[in-house]
Length: 415
Image 1 (tube, rainbow, N blue to C red):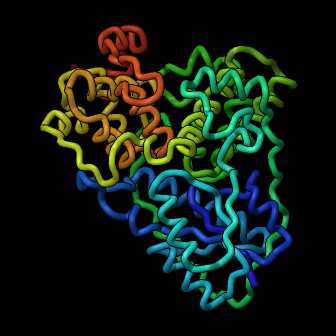
Image 2: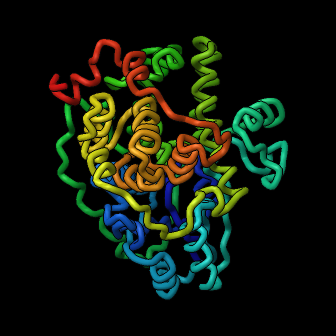
């Protein structure tokens, strides 16, 4: 009997708890294109936009290749996870279902549905920087604000070692149809894109090699992270982290290696600081459940034409429009731009923050449910540390695009 590895946002074998544990067992790695994700959202927008779909498919191709090189394979299916797994179990009896725990409502619903199949299930906490068992507090007593969380984990918790890539896998010989990976959308990569990279672990490792070892850009991260134009103003790890092609834990240990062999400074620490932010949103969601998301399930926000103009980059504010056009054209825009467009939508256009969160889910290549909702509620002033987050857009433009390079790049000088 085989073990089924139910993959979602953990498309890697490097530093993967389950692949490490089951490397000497017969396994069926499975990725399902969940029918819910393939639908439109409550505003009739695609939940999985073309740019993120492209990166996802590249990640699946990369993972299948890595598995096949080691005697394994990756099964691809579409539909309801419960129905897909039930069908596999009929043909190839399963000893157990292994998966990374996710604490967003939709993922929890899917887990509960699969549990009804009465196949033994084993969950793993592999999507964090700090393992939940190593936190210096219980999830019920997680600090309410990030600074308190960060100080406690930095002082009292340690990041566990990462798991190396297994050298060999075994899959059931009875399986003759592993499913086809859908064709990658034929999207033209905009030459102005800040993320012209391929999905998958190889792409992530190439970027890390470039950013850390070939250019020493890591040593300048804190000074350049608020940049807005070009490929090297920030690490760009977020799309690979979102699809799980690389782990926060692996990046952490590479930073520590860099600090030992090259230099340790405020910039090297600041990249780890950002990984701790990522953990904060995840652990807070695990602690609060549905309350973390601040809105009822299937809530339909009431928007106006101002929301549509914001999406299209036609607000009349050049700084905002440049960012929104970049987002539509590439699936990516800088963290600085995201904060500004979110503030502008909520505080200047008086549109519901949830509508912005849905749009980001549709178009961002690095969409992550926890970071997306954590950041939107933060900017809207309804999340943790609920102070006013209204940005002075003109001041932001003057500070971060003083020479107007960003606006000229995306508005073709027409503003």
